[in-house]
Image (cartoon, rainbow, N blue to C red; front, side):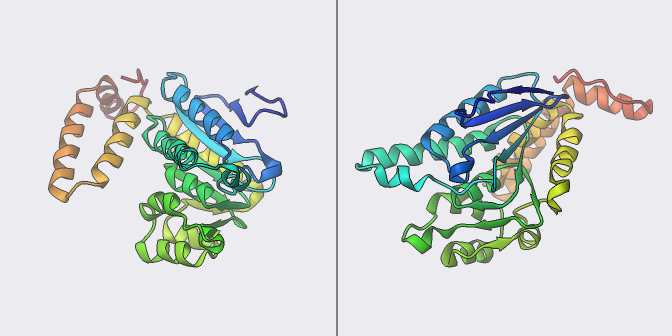
Length: 266
C-alpha cells in the first residue's frame, strides 16, 4: 500500500491499497471534515484524475477524526457576502456530487460518526455505502433556517419520499439501522469491522472488468430518470454494446470452460 498527500496541511489524503483500490480521506478532522471550497476543489480534482486513471478500479471515501463529514463549512458560508459568491460555492458542490455519480469507477462511502447535510449528500451520491453501527445521518439545515435543498436531491433519489421529507423537515438524525432499512446504506457493522466491510465491497468490485462496470454504472443512473419504455430501450442498447466487448466474450468463455476470466478492460 502506498500513501500520498500525508502532510498535515493536506485537505485530502490518498492511499493506494492495491488491486486498483483508491482510498480517499477527507482530512479536516478539527472541523468534522466540513466541505470547505478547498476540500471540495481537491476532492473534485482527485475524482477527475481517478476517472481517467486506467489503474484505478474502485474508490473508497472516508473522513478523518471523529466523523465522516459535517456538511458545508458554515464559517466559510457566512463569510460570503454576495449572491455570486454563494452561487459559486453551490455550483462547486453540485459539480463535485455529479463527479462522484458520473465517475466511471464505483465509489464507496465508508461512514463513521456523523454524516450531516452535504456530508449526507455525499454518502447518497456514492454508489455504495457502509457505516459503523453508531453512525448517524441527518439533514439539519432546517434547524438553522437553511433548508438542505441540494442534499435533498441525492437523498430523494436514494430513499422513499416520506423518509426523505422526514429528515429534511425535522432535521432529526437517522441511526445506522434505520439508514440501512431505508436504503441509504448497504451495511452497518461494528466500528472495528468497518474497514473490512468497505474492503469487502472494494475487492469484489476491483476483481470485475472495469469496462463492464463503466458501461453498467453509466446506464444505471441514466435510465433512472426515464419512463419504463425508454429505460428498457436504453438497457437493450447497452446490453448489445456490452455483448460486443472483449471482456464479455472472455467472461462467457471462462464460465463455459470453468476457469477464472482474464480481463482486458475493453
